[in-house]
Amino acid sequence: MTSIPDYKIFPLGDSALTIDFGNTINECLNDTVISIFNSLQQNPFEGLIESVPAYSSLTIYYDISIINKIIKNESTVFHWIKNKVNEQLQQKQVLLNKKVSTVSIPVCYDKKYAPDLEWMSEHIKISCEEIIQLHCDTTYRVFMLGFLPGFAYMGTVNNKIEAPRKQKPQNVSEGSVGIAGKQTGIYPLSSPGGWQIIGRTPLKLFNKKEGNTLLNPGDSVRFYSINKDEFDNIESRNS
Image 1 (cartoon, rainbow, N blue to C red):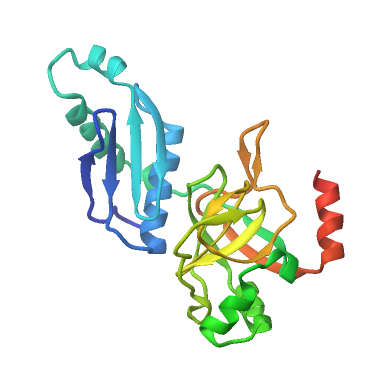
Image 2 (image 1 turned 60 degrees about the vertical axis):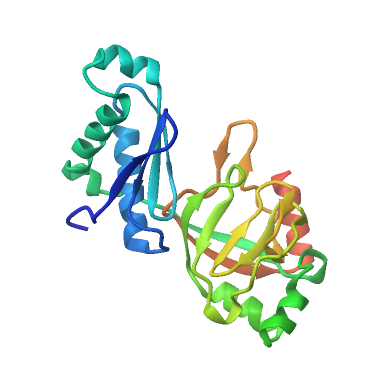
């Protein structure tokens, strides 16, 4: 990446703004978003609270009271922050991504943990075994975290196993692996959800005590299939 793509900056309420590179799932744009996020982590401006990366946008939250003391009515808070952001985007270090991880995640696709696998098989007209194989054959990118702490939106799935969201959310168990459209993801906590559940991992995606997440934006993920005994053994080690 040698330059910042075209972007728009607009306010989000009175204490946040969004840098938008276009409403699309695109790895190059996501690289840009994560690079800017990393740059702000390393070089925060005064008043910055946090920044939240998404597929092709970055939202920045800031403390109005701190910034008002700095600008002393010489500008609006939004325009002051916007100028700061534009300055940050012109710096060379914003184009440098920090090293990301490749994570292998075990998944048990047994019927006990895959309530929607047979429905998917009937819906997309391929066997359960082929769905599992195609799900494991792809290396996925973590585009963003959201919805729940540690919930990683990953893509993109093989087009043969794309599946629609459920019309009505249902209770989903912690560790459940699902598909929705071109995306796959893992529920880090038990929660209502509308993704098609095809398996479950025994790994912990979110450490409640420390607030750490197993996956982070930009990471690469590979799934591999395990049986129920392997699931129980890994789960017992991680409990």
